[in-house]
Image 1 (cartoon, helix red, strand yellow):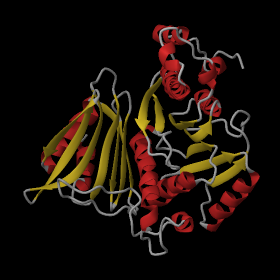
Image 2: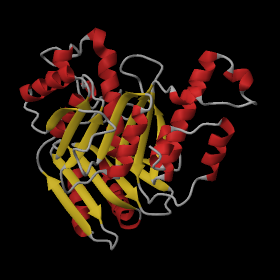
Image 3: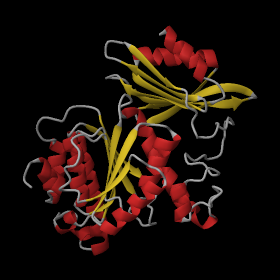
Image 4: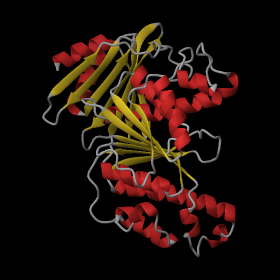
Length: 383
């Protein structure tokens, strides 16, 4: 524990960008803590943003107090700590027997030094002023790294996605290469941004595979990957249901996979026992043709409302099925890249073993609405 305290004292200064405590021990109300430096009354403090249940709490500490508090958390509450500074990165793992492993990389981050004001303006993970080749080609950035005014929404949306990714980084393996699979990658705006941020900016050991059915898209993306020197970013032609190229995948991303293609992507992720799933569904038509309820008929008789209700039910049931498979699942608002109303993101993190038997609440819902989603049938081996 003394080695940990010494390392914390090194990282708890004005150069700290962020520190995240995660992987809580069983039975704890606190599930995550984020720490950042702030300037309060011209004095350097450290703000701990603590997630307890569904509520967020903020506490401010001096350096000595923060060091002691983090050491206590790591001894009694959390199993992972990840710190990022402009001087390097630190990763801490605590085994079930309480053994602490410290891993430090002294390579500086390309993320800018933190803004210490307490009421700081919104800062993006991909900072303006650092040219990113793919964003320049997209017309989002100039060659000098300035954001093109007309494309600022696009820049903001990419950063929003990266924020979702950053939240789950402590859940991924830190002792080996992490494989990320992007199903239906399309033109790969977010795939390139993801690789640039994680590999180039954060220096993480990752490999990303983009999969799409369009051969011309794959050729174009492969050429760009080679152009930028992204050696571990690969693009392949193939469909979601039939892909068998990897035996182990740590994170599955599926953005705008149409209708039941999302279900096949979620099913593949479950079969791989993927630690993290990020899915933005699209065009959920399947349950629109199934849903039936005498009580809801006054609402369902209107096509537009029926379509929207069916889409929401589809995503809710997908989240329920992921929960049954041992995933902690959230449905979050995501600003869609194409500016459409389809702005739901399903984020799932594997934290426990699958349930035995079927969830009674899930069964009651599907029976009441007379629906049976594709993902349910896939999990039961019916397809």
